[in-house]
Amino acid sequence: MRTKYALPAIVAAAALLLTGCVDNSTDTPGTGGDTPAVGVDEAAVALLPDDIKASGKLVIGIDPTYAPNEYKDDAGNPIGWDVDLGNAMAAKLGLTPDYQISSFDKIIPSITGGTYDIGLSSFTDNEEREKSVDFVNYYQAGIQWAQQIGKTVDQANACGLTVAVQATTYEETDELPAKSKACTDAGKAAITILKFDKQDEASNALALGRADAMTADSPITQYAVSQLSDKIELAGDAFDVAPYGIAVDKGSALAQAIQAALQSMIDDGSYKTILDKWGVFSGAIDKITINAATAG
Image (cartoon, rainbow, N blue to C red; front, side, top):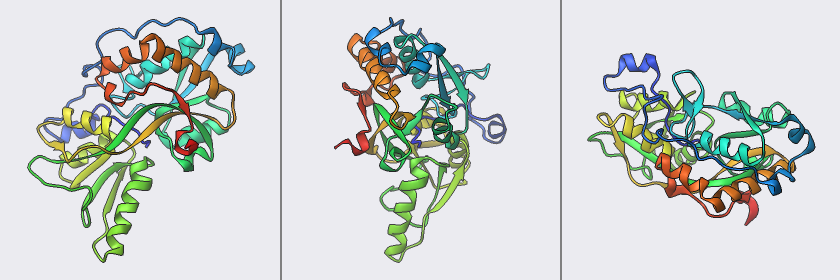
């Protein structure tokens, strides 16, 4: 998306329609245990813009509909491994995290408009997004497809299929249009892109048979399959691995402060502890970078 990457809890309306849909908003793998306590990193604090340091808080735009990355508990509060990372990162900076729930497509405009300090919502860092914001890269995720159990879907040959996806994600804006164009250029049927506002709706559409396949970030797809294991399964391995990034206003010194805070978490082991807790360490990195999509 976000690429976003992880499936949220199943919405109640869909749960009524689909036997086997489970609302795991608070009872999901990896949610046990406390987020590791981290100390303030004075070197990172020194890099903060004066206005943010003076405010004492970090205003974070988030779309909590992408479990296990970011989703809501029963009280409506954001949780997930992205949230755990955000909490620890803010602590490193001596700030209190202030999560502002938003639709995914409004987060970057709210950063450039000065409403949010950062966006932490499974953003895939790409060249187009870097025209508007900078990204502090903290994770690697791929794209992965799912299919109904017993069906056979090949993501490299999906011409004529209907594929469910969350709107405004990388999969919807880049992956599927490119694959569909390749189909039509070869004289084959286009891919029908079935868009939904929330990832759980896309996952449920596949489970209900409204789509032939679903595409999302690899952590998201894997989580969706774990929650709907009697209905859907993985369709091949993850591919097109790319960095997740925390979105920051273009040219802001806040990017360097966040980079330092996250690198401190890697160095002290708290980064690994959080990812291990949620079972997503396979996408871990050992060096925090900025704007990886265009850096090399």
